[in-house]
Length: 125
Image 1 (cartoon, rainbow, N blue to C red):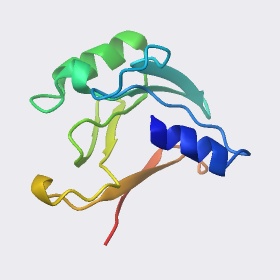
Image 2: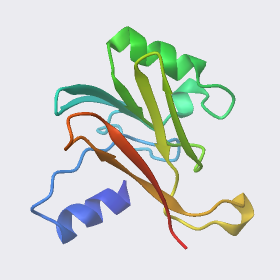
Image 3: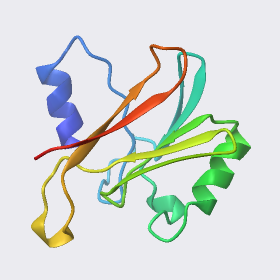
């Protein structure tokens, strides 16, 4: 969350939405948020509360129960994309390089400008 606070200062003209991760202790930030983006209902969560390292079933069930079209989550620090039965699941990975984690730093882009969700995984090399 400190990174988001810095980004808000560096880019005051941008809107930021964040959720708390498993290492964040701030009570004022929710663990989940639901947004409407270009007509799509988007669930944003860190993912630790849904045990995403083991399975995507719990997060899928929660999203379907909320009527979400798209789920953006993290926690594993690894990119993941799936479209199944009308639900997009997307983990953009992590921009922070961590050698002990053995993954390539990455980020994601969700683009709805063409009238449908286009999701891009971008690696930082």
